[in-house]
Image (cartoon, rainbow, N blue to C red):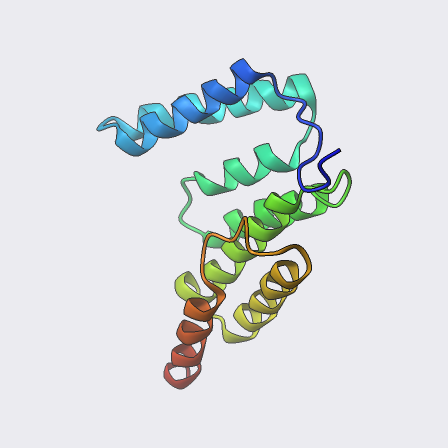
Length: 150
């Protein structure tokens, strides 16, 4: 059994539908309409399968909010859910997303440092197969942030 990915409760059709909606959002001029459909589909899947780490992380990826902390909360919840059953991809990607938000969106050096450490710990523990951002790029941005934050 593959310990990296939990048993997938979503059907192949559901996974394909989500990927299709993501592509539609990314490539569509009517982003808002595609985003509404994406979130409606996520909600239906959560009602059917319960709260899943992967769905919660996807919801955070495409959450339209003025406050980045809303996305952080969803990523933190996805990390909680990814502990059991273990979902390495969600642990690595969500922690990296949180680090990026704190460093690049919120310019919060202490939280950026904390979450960069968590991200690097997951990469050290599980490998960088699922890493989206290079930790060294985030580290460089964090060092620059330290000099600009008064």
